Length: 141
Image (cartoon, rainbow, N blue to C red):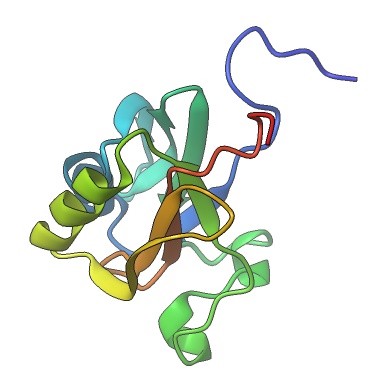
């Protein structure tokens, strides 16, 4: 079994049409930090790594290659997603207020949950679905 020295062994990966703009937006709106950004020769992003706490998100520009043809952008499939990135945050209400003020499209408003913690869901400017919450499944119930 893998044993990373940092972070998680599960890392979501997204593609964006304007990856440079989305890197800036994800850092500003959601609090991600740039770990690495590698440009391609077409003015896009070949590969980027953004961190949030011990977690990581990988992303790159949409491209017409073998792997890229296996992925769809939300606006190509009626705004739907087949997965949602979930991020545990320390202060969910403050995160919600900041993301909303920065232009995230709120899908499910901030709500205290019966099972503990709070959460909300939103879309980024290119339509990818995100869930943020204070419920930490790693903590004992």
